[in-house]
Length: 342
Ligand SMILES: *Cc1c(COP(=O)(O)O)cnc(C)c1O
View 1 (cartoon, rainbow, N blue to C red):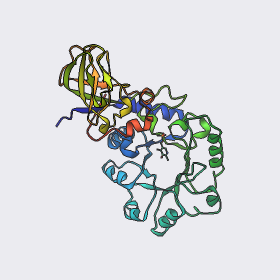
View 2: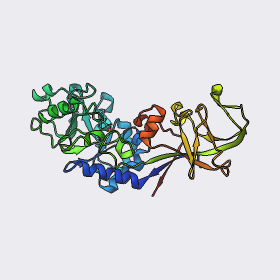
View 3: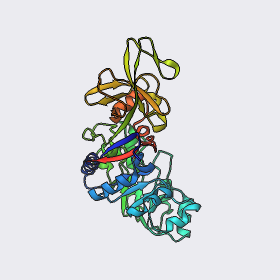
View 4: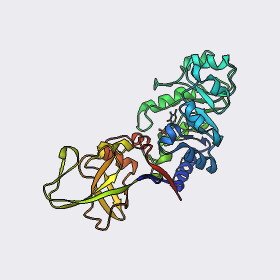
């Protein structure tokens, strides 16, 4: 069955973005965060393409996400570590856990787990063990592949970036870890001394650009929706819930099969733009749960059953909607067909 809405996903742009980030990572390897179903775009489709391009490190959040990718046999790490409930699946070898707490580390030793990664907290106070605990031997004897930490504000020029980098660098040689890894997408653009041995981009692979240095990152995802109805709204008529848009003159309007339940958020009300060929077609009034109205005076031929593409360059769409670039892609819902092109 063909859905009335689809995500057009650009394979060439995805692979090109990974190559840009890999080159920016210098001698460090470049991995890929594919948690949250590949940031909403489909983890399997992304994992397969990036593995073919040469990516050898993939990150998911949970063991359910790892299991969903089992058939691809990707080299995976599970960021949220090993809860008691996870011990069996973790021991099955489908992924390395990223151990975050002394209890997780004790659990991993108890079950006789093998290679693992470890997250160290260097100031974000989210997940990870304390550097003091690393110094006093918490990790001794563990078979650590990658020692990680995570930057809190890599998308901004803040002194905290260098503080976190220095705190992390001070742990070099304190563990038996084969590699060290600090930088997310924005961290890669902070410079060579943030790359360590492995970088972990997510959002930039998918077209997110949050700081200087990411100019070469290309758009990957474009939502497209089908026209369900075309109508003429007479001057003075209103469109949508709460009648927030009133026609200043007779206006041609098309109703699209797309809404906030699909992740096309209400912030696009009166702000979003759709395209039919070269014509720019503004969103009129409120975005509904399953429907959006656009003005189509500029597209006289556009008819019921035709498709339009929504403007979704992430920095611009974020500015228009007030949602973060992350929310704009991870929110894209299950009702889209995901169609890879090129
Ligand atoms: C999500 C995540 C990343 C990727 O971050 P982006 O900002 O999307 O590049 C890297 N490392 C960890 C630990 C993460 O949770």
